Amino acid sequence: MEWVETTGKTVEEAKELALDQLGVDQEDAEFELLEEPKTGLFGRPRGDARVRARILPKSPRAKVERKRRPRKDEAGSAPAAGNSDNSTNTADDRNVSRGTSASRERSEPRRNKEPMDQAEQCTVVEEFLTGLAESFGFSASAQAVFEEDDLRVNLSGEGLGVMVGPRLVTLEAIQEITRNTLQRQAEGREYGRVTVDIEGIRERRKQALTAFVTEQATTVTNGTTVVFEVMSSADRKQVHDVASEIDGISSVSEGEDPRRRVVLKPA
Image (tube, rainbow, N blue to C red; front, side, top):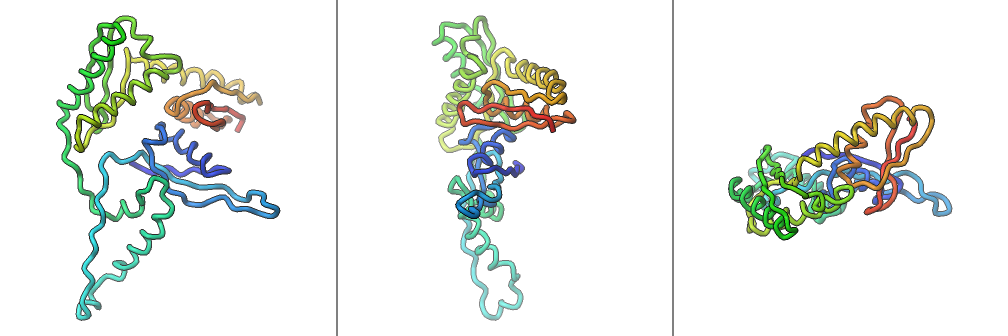
């Protein structure tokens, strides 16, 4: 997964902007602090915080094995960069917020965990979601498929709107519970990134957000600022993506989770 780089007046603001771009919650991302905001005269802030982030890899990286030090008669043939890697990694360790050094991860040999069988993963999430629907009093069917490393499951049935909730809040909670269930069943094996949908509501909401941002763009280009309702990080990312394709407007996220929202402004 590629890294994204963002800046903000504070480290937390820069992180929130990165989460907006990635479209994930904080527990699903890892951060590297590139630059802290400096304090100027009389304690006034000077300069921005700069971070980079990416979606947290599914497989943990193994520790780097200590390299065998060359004997004296091998010193002339040893690559000069061999020793500098360790010092660089040590310095970078201090800048990673999730306790795992991003720079160390890039230099380590990747040792993948045993993958969980995809058919087994599909069965786990399908059975869990149909059982959950039954606990709500609904009869539903679940269909899970893999798209590369992503496990996407759609729940179909009558009256499932209560499992969606306003602004997909309930659906997001169900998705997190489903992911945790699969993680427990995996028992240390590698598993796919889970996305739960109900009757295709996510795609319909994505289309609705795209249409609404496009509609509001005319108002913004005329000099008016538009403030959106509180949104999830996935919805905010969709708004930012659409706004970035429209000339004459810019978008920023404001507020603190869980009441963070997007503001459209003239560029």
